[in-house]
Image (cartoon, rainbow, N blue to C red):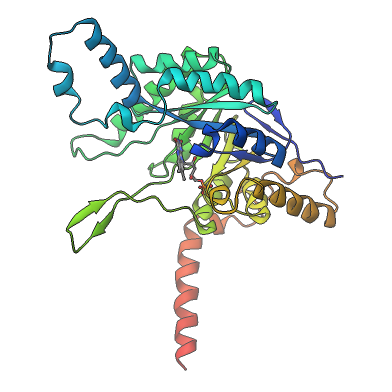
Length: 338
Ligand SMILES: Cc1cc2nc3c(=O)[nH]c(=O)nc-3n(C[C@H](O)[C@H](O)[C@H](O)COP(=O)(O)O)c2cc1C
């Protein structure tokens, strides 16, 4: 029988499919169901920097009643009630999740600047998190902020979290960095054990009748996997740590592509919201069938086989691909016209 186990963040996982951060894992029944279906680890939903700051300030306000600076300073933040769980509730859920299943449970911290809130990483570790995923989603709208400064802040944040805990920390990154290989190397120097490619960028949509800008959340499609594959394939072999792929993983074929690009795990969320948690079992069965038919003894040995360092012709990963794609398209178009 083909071996599906993979190493990720120093843990031996039973297979390649990890459930990425999703509200589905806020239910213990779902968490048990994910394990039964074959998920090899689960990342819980995030605790947000803004929420933790809000809770701390609410506590300070309780302790020093009579000042009104607290309410004024919170205008720019979502209300505390907008967050799904208090941080105490989160830690309790984490403890229960650990008791409910044998697969690793990772906690998720979500923030953009270093500060006192990173101490919650320690609380997550004490509550039983076997690893921490640090989601560093940030969006720059200030023209005076340079890319150097943004990366410096990110590295400070990562170093702060990694220093606070002993469990491995993976960094969930956004796609838009000028030099991702250089940044990832520096994230490792700051203590990161892995990178997770990539955060989805939830752009608001425009309502042109109401002249309003509205938040949107669409589930992913497999086409979103391509930039993740591209970057994993470039990074593979250049990092000491692991690469997790999240975004567009829906089928066994997607899982294979993620691993062949150089990922250690393929993470799923949208596919589970669309098809149900049982989908994991179907994808694993398809994956096993594919590997056995081609007599691969293990999935791990396919890791990185299509990475940039493994393929004889690297041009599909470089600027050559861009030129070739555009030129071949215009040629086809021209021929179709005759
Ligand atoms: C409803 C929903 C809630 C999510 N919440 C979080 C979150 O709290 N923290 C986080 O890092 N990612 C969160 N994500 C992003 C997912 O973890 C995942 O990275 C993303 O959906 C891409 O994977 P997919 O294509 O399999 O959906 C959320 C996604 C969805 C759909």
